[in-house]
Length: 324
Image 1: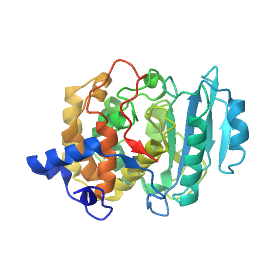
Image 2: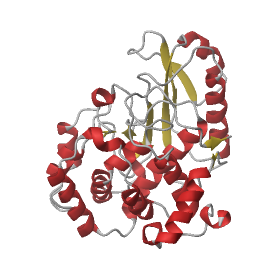
Image 3: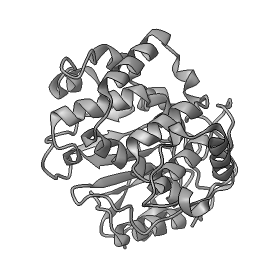
């Protein structure tokens, strides 16, 4: 079954698997290792940029190496006494860019004293032109709001808990969005949402200039991910964000998503429960967002991790589930 579970052509509705098939699939996922890919086969209108935050090593040590990569730069990070961030220009999905990102992360991971399990984040700027229209943006917001808890746990990367400062720099948005999103027709406009939300939320809308044109600063920033120097986790996370934006153009059961959002609004679950494992929800989400088994399997592996719920600290990693 491995060829089926990792196929870029096959696409089974995993949320509708029989109990036996689901148990077999989960057993496979538990032992599965995510590989680094040469490309993600994203549409040509796709673009992304990264902010790789780190601590424990002076920025000057990173500067000289990064100078050799034309699409990346070494910057200070004002919140860290010792540390910095490596920032990219807008990148497209090709072999060269993924190769450079991998080389940079591997180099950084070998620096003595470097760490990302404190307050460091892994921020990704996705090109807003991937949405094409404000209507697609509203559909994206609905999908995001319903499954925000799933996205956050996935974005814990190789840990079962968010970094300590996440509520300060990447505050969850479901409560506010469920209030703003009464229906697709009555959702607040981008202009209104920009006024309501500052940049220190899970999503940052402040840089959106257009839903049609490429631009260095025309992006939706995803800020919730924990810091990491694992290139596979970076790539897999960028793939989720890209496919989440692209899913806004697919046929979705809007009425069902509206219903689910209102249920979650009434339940009013605290953010502290975002680390809880919700496999049924994750399967539903994977079927909506992804159109092949490889993407679904990679997503579910990073979401499930070691199968445990949130722990008290962000310091310890789960058993490694990537290879490169």
